[in-house]
Every structure is written in structure tokens, then in C-alpha cells.
Image (cartoon, rainbow, N blue to C red; front, side, top):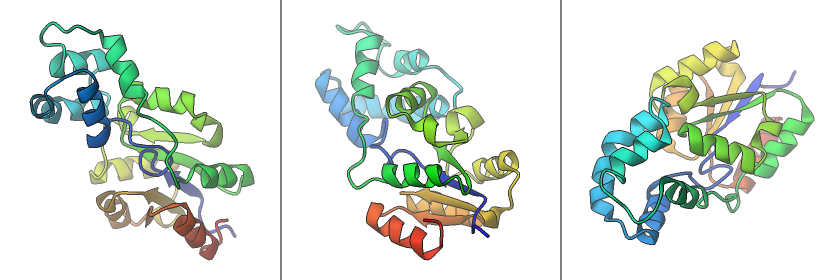
Length: 203
């Protein structure tokens, strides 16, 4: 019997670069000549709601950047944000594709991402073609590593925790999943992941 009924991948840091993390924000802020400390203070307040799907990208940008007149538009800023998304070097996109093609289990995502960047990334990299379920923070109104998002994911999947594998690059997210009984793997590169999946009989 195949060892898992579902395998869930994080996206940023496992398949692609992060959508809007510290590095990506720093690059875009520098491109538009924005004060990083000022932005980060506002981002800390307003980003969680955007990542949970409670606000739109325009509302988020109005509260963090466009609270005063700017020489650029929302569209220009958002385009620069999206341009930071590229396939991760030594990432697991090939492994995702291989596992999905085997049709041996349900494959999906459990990721923290705001709706607009999430949907851009899914479309640009054809990610939905590989999965049966997208358990993104913006759809569930919960964020990793909050235990509630893992319980919600298990409810939606209808699968026992031990029959779910979860792959994430962040120690705290993997640990929170493991605390719910999920078989969690911290991603440390495609080669290490492939070796572990071969050992477990997944690939």
C-alpha cells in the first residue's frame, strides 16, 4: 500500500522563491525608492490580514505605500512584486511533477500566500496542473504555523494525520504540522528530499 493518501507541498521556499518575503520586499522597495524601515513597520501590521485573504492587494498597498501620493501606480508596484517570483534553484518542482504524474496519491499545496500573488504564481508556473487541492492561507483564513490551519487542512482532506505528508522549508511550520500528527519533512533541497521520498517509498 502506498504510504500516504496525500502529499502537501509548501510553495515559497520549496518550489519557487518566496512571493513577498524580506528579500523580495527589499528589492522592490529599493527599485521604487521607498523607505524600508517605514514600510516594514506598516507591513507588520497589515500583511497578516492580506495573507489570510481578509483584505485585497489594493487595500494592503493603500495602507503600506499609497497612503500618500506616489510617482508610480498600484499596477506598477504589483508587477514588480510579481517579478520576484522565479523557480527556486534546487527546488522541488520536478519532484512535484513526478509525484503528480504517478497518480499514487492526492497532491496539493499548504502554503501561506496572499490571494493575488498566489493566483499569479499558480497561473505563471502552471502549478494547478499538478494538484488536486490548494490549501492556501488566503483561502482558509488561517496561516502557518497556527495549529488551526493544519486541523482545517485535515478536515478538508478527510484523511488521518499519519496518512498525510507535508513538505516545508521552515522549521516552525514543519514542527507545527508534526504536532498535529502529520508526517512533516523540512525541505533542504531537491536532492535531500528525493532521497527521503525514495526511502519512504513515495518515489
